[in-house]
Amino acid sequence: MNNNVIFGINGPVITVKGKTEFKMMEMVHVGKENLVGEIIGITDDYTTVQVYEETTGLKPGDPITGTGNPMNVLLGPGILDNMYDGIERPLKAIEKESGAFISRGSQVNALDSEKLWNVTLKVKPGDKLNAGEIYATIPETQIIEHRLMVPPEISGEITEVMPDGEYKIFDTVAKIKDEYGEIHELTLCQKWPIRFSRPIEKRLPTTVPLITGQRTMDTMFPIAKGGTAAIPGGFGTGKTMNQHQLAKWSDADIIVYVGCGERGNEMSQVLEEFSSLVDPKSGRPMTDRTVLIANTSNMPVAAREASIYTGITLAEYYRDMGYDVAIMADSTSRWAEALREISGRLEEMPAEEGFPAYLPSRLAEFYERAGRVKTLSHDSGSVTIIGAVSPQGSDFSEPVTQNTKRFTRVFWALDKALAYARHYPAINWMDSYSEYFNDLDPWFNENIGPDFVECRNRFSALLQEENSLMEIVKLIGSDVLPDDQKLVIETAKLIRVGFLQQNAFHAEDTYVPLEKQLKMMQVILHLYDKSKEVISKEIPISKLLATGIFDKLTKIKYDIPNNKLEMFDDYNKEIDEKIDKILTDTII
Image 1 (cartoon, rainbow, N blue to C red):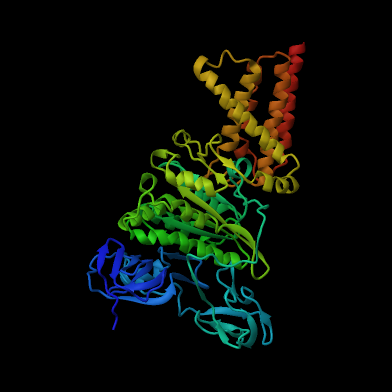
Image 2: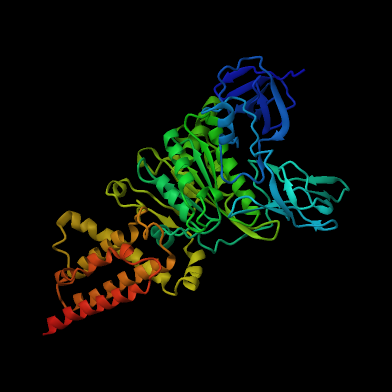
């Protein structure tokens, strides 16, 4: 008979009176409907359980049953092209079982246990395999090969191998004998606790950029594969749109999108859009390399807290196969609010703005699971974390944004004024930064062009100078400025409108290769350098502007196709001709 029964209920927090046999962080089933919960506190007098489902209807005296295992997820083929809730329950399968709403205590398997997978074995009897090494492959989707790995806690000699063919996820395809003589069955799946990072051989330096095709992100504030970035911004500044662009165009092999506490209508829009998107690299649906975790604001608040860990564990699993994975967390503010609510119900001492004192350490736990690594199978893979932050009233001084800045190395600050001015992406070039320049600059110079870094630095300097000059302009107007400073303002405007502003719905501008980004910088700076020659000869800037060349360069992002970069030579030639004509006419 089960002596562990509910003593008290406070929202998602359940207490059990007296001593129990439960272990810290153990997964338990609560009540007659077997709701999923986790042990989060144990004393001599009480055990505290966090329940990941709606607790309406529970009452004191209802049973609590332990599983003996920590909160974990099932890992295997079928994760991609799937949608899960925060505790890895498949939403498509639940919809068939219970309709539009998730029924409490739903016990649907995370992966389809009846589906047959075409398995190709890569080992033979007598082979010695270490933890994490690959023993079979499966075509999970048309563009992603699923690699079955020996679980991290097992290594030894293969004793038996099944023939290639079709198997279900729980079928045994090989057997391995460990150093103690124990035989372990290798199936198509394994389990892993979500709060523990998966083991690796070693960390690698972050020296390769995650190429996104977004000029502001690639050129001005780049992120490395295995890096961390925050996208903070108020309502309507384009956080979700930016993450869509990153998911669609970044050169990550696999995308994990975690909708954490977002509005239901926004999340359903994300799901619909991802279903209709076509992967530009393969021509296949984007869902072939995407897994979506949907945890809307009306779902149980505790599951919101688990969804982040579920997402990062799935990302690490594919990283261990040798893939580059990007995880989009939208948004970590809603996750932090879930921590605050549960902390309040536990009657813990609140810190700033009511958030728990351990908010920084929880954020660190999450972001520090990013990285570019050498896997146990001696391959290289990476997990890049891009977390959206939703500060109330666009106040970047609030605790979640400030603590996120401590653990991320890229800060893409979204600006409400830019968004309202229809400048997208609305990334403020004065408030944003990247700490990956020293790591990535050698790669850019070697692979894109020797003057890539110099061009970017000159762009940054011009934007900084414009920012200082605009303070003067606001006070006394632009007429009093000398022509060389007016040229800085005109060039910075060209950079802002012609380079930083990007149209996600334009065929040529939605994704821009790095080679074109460099050419765009070079032609803008060529115009600036030639214009300085004109200004130095005391020729008024009005003559330069009258040529129309500044206006023409704002449209090169649309006028020059991504596959016809030789057209930039024509623009450079036209600049030279128009500048020379101004100089010649003046001399005459």
